[in-house]
Image (spheres, rainbow over the protein chains, first blue to last red):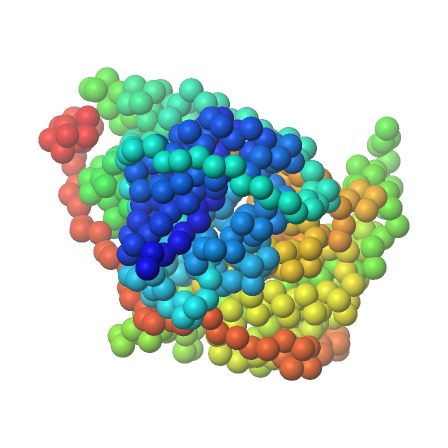
Length: 313
Length: 271
């Protein structure tokens, strides 16, 4: 018998977020997975077409409603809950979108949630990090219980493209609340690669000294085609905006190359980067904890080293 | 427009945030957790993490939740701040700390063993029905189990708005404008009250507790209720099968300058 899994697609109205392809890989790790992706949107056609391309997806359901203009958990959750009946697993990405939404779905379904799934051991057994990744918990869901899950995207590769799956419209007839209204979102600059999916990431810490100091990182990042991140200390100090924060309460990432510049390496930061393939640390303090996890370390003055690297590449 | 008046009791900019009459009550949920400075170790037999004799504290995100509630009250936005927790008898230490920070009274729902988020949320819902707050503020996640669910669960069960990961909160007549830290940047929502708000790190910096306040807190009311008195069944749907330490990264190499670094990256095929 197949295991019916529903995955909630994350998107911005026109493009599918890469986090969704990672949820698909997680779901495929479950034996005999029968995977349905649901796209909630005003007009779902473009996103559904992208979702249907993901290998392993059996069908795409679209739920269209003018109320789905913005991804509001209070509005989306009842629509997902309304179609979740036949599924034993309801998954979404462990991004701010998914973390906000999936737990609300869990409440509506009265089904327990496994947060931050990093490995699948069986259809009912999962591994997840706790204590900021300082311990790994293996958790077993009670037999027969529906389970909601958020997928730790850094733990799974993106599903490749495959034979396009069918796209069907789902008729959802539930009353949607009006008590939650979207006002605005600050648009960050988009001409650099996305931090969460970039192959190369360069991050700066408080040692950069100012928002101006971050400019030397941007210059290097642009030469490398890298995304730019920041430590919590740098964000708190106002050197970089919050969406650049890497770490336990920021973004958890798994790039091929991670370069930590002037970052001491608090445990909360290391939690966000430990799935990176190669970690490079540049710091003037040779005792900084970042060197414990770095594959390549360089002790010295970043304001001399960064321009030099830029010249050499 | 606000004029400058050094003798004004409260700056106008802040007063204008609370045009409505103060709300009756804010409910704040807190959790007792291993202090964030403690280095976590998994027990050799994999049955849990070592918590014997380690320092316990209020979950840092919940401390931010309490601080926000206290600031609202101090600006005239609320009459009372009630702090609640679900857990074993020891949790009363953290409730006392919360009272010392400035909460008016505390509710302790006694429960032993693992309490799953759905159970906590059901308890919170019962307390909400009893206390009728216009605002419930919680931390976005607890730093022990890192589940990050309780606020959203409560909002779902209560059928009320949620604004998670808040970094700014403004109250208007019967509504709140909340800035949220999301992956894309900062999102602003407007939500009708009553509502649930969960806090992110940059919402505020919690105050330190002063000694006289610790003495005063001893006289503040702290009521203990059992799960059954509240009317919630304990339920375990997620069984912890085992705990293990995380995979360690191999110790790397040190290079002496930028040229060596670039050479090493080229050798690895990364440049």
